[in-house]
Length: 258
Image (cartoon, rainbow, N blue to C red; front, side, top):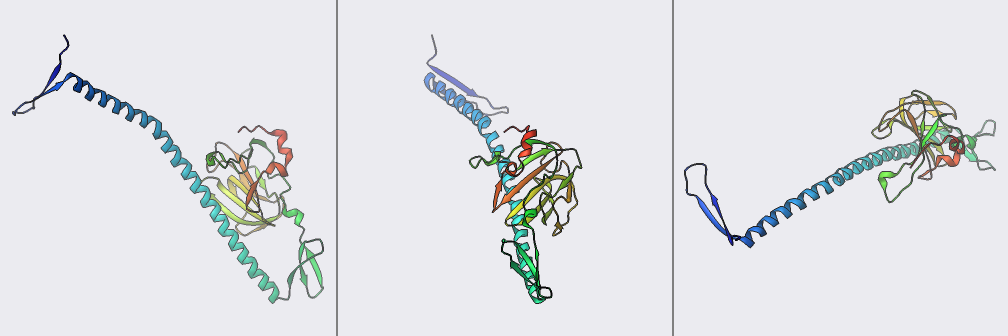
C-alpha cells in the first residue's frame, strides 16, 4: 500500500533540536514537479538565450565599429569641403577663379592668359581595377539583417600586391580601423568615394592627391580578415554601389558565395 504522507526529518550537524515535517503524498509530488519543471525551464532558457545574447553583442560591436569608421570619413569629408572653400578664397585673392565650361567640366581661369585649365572628370570615375585577383565575395545588401551586409567586394590576391587608385582623387582617410584594418579612402569629386581595406601597408598620405593607377597601398590581411585580400567599395551620393557595375570583368573569375 502506498503511503499517504511523507515525513522529512532535518538533523543538524552539531547539537541541536531536530525538525520534522509531515507532508501529504500529493503535496510532496507537487513540490518535486515544480522544482524539476523550474530547473528544466532554466536550463532550456540558458541554452536558448545565451548564444543570442552573445550574437547580439557581436553584431552591436560590429555595427558600432562600422558607424565609427563611417563617421570618421564623414568628418574628413566635411573638413575637405572646408579646405576647398578656403582654397576658393585663396584663388580669388590671387586673381584666379573656378569656372564651368560648356561641357560641364570645371577649370581654373588665369587672368593673364584668359585660358581655362580643364579638369577631366573621366579620370575621377572608378574605371580601373585596383588589383587583379579572384573575386571571393560579392556585395550583399540585406537591410533586414545588418550582420549579413557586405558593402563591397573581396578580391583574393597575394600578400603585398600593389593596390592601385581606381580613379584620380584625394586621400581623405589613411590609417588603421578595427573592421577593415589598414584602410585608404579616396574622394574623387562628384560625390564619388572608394574604399580599399585590409592592406598590409599604406603608401598614400592623408590629403595627398593621387592619379588613377597610382599605388596607394599593399594588400594584406589586417583587421577582420581570414586571408590576404582587398576589400573594395564604391560609394556614390552617400550610398554604396556594386563595384561589378563598373567592373563586369570580375564576373569572369567570380568564386563568391553568399
